[in-house]
Length: 182
Image 1 (spheres, rainbow, N blue to C red):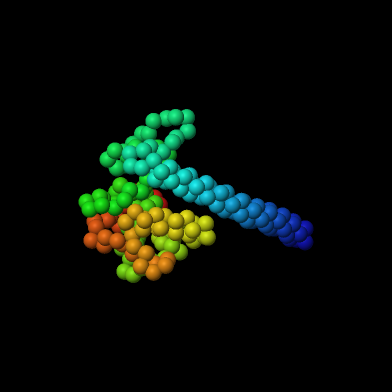
Image 2 (cartoon, rainbow, N blue to C red; image 1 turned 135 degrees about the vertical axis):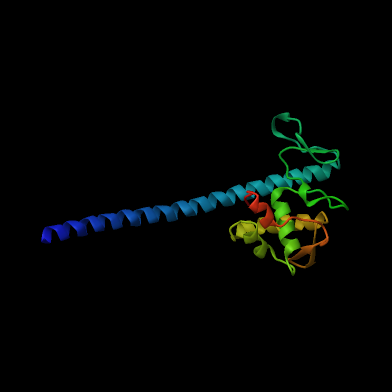
């Protein structure tokens, strides 16, 4: 019997070593993945900011420059054509929240549904993002943009509320029930 027990112990030790090696690999891959997500997030925010600056410099009706000289594909606001840029139009009476890009719409919906002012760090997990510094800062930038465009109000620094609480917005959960993912 001694040899069977020894064989089982050896197999158990080998399996434990493989599990530990895989766990170490997962830790390394998770760290690399988070680093790449941060790079991706910074690049996306930079692209959005540059497109917004270009739109602001060109004034209304000016399309953002696109690689390869392609023509803009869609209308965001009447007369404003955009490709490759996230467009957050200025709020005006009758403009539905549906005109906002998905992540901005999610932010407005979360803030509108809240009973009290919210901070970026409270909003991030509610829109389906990990509560890490990069995501919180990116969301804070989006919140500031929504304030500048009249969708939200920043009563106290870092505290955001809906600028138009009576506006008709679908809740984030109702869209999730229809298969939308955040």
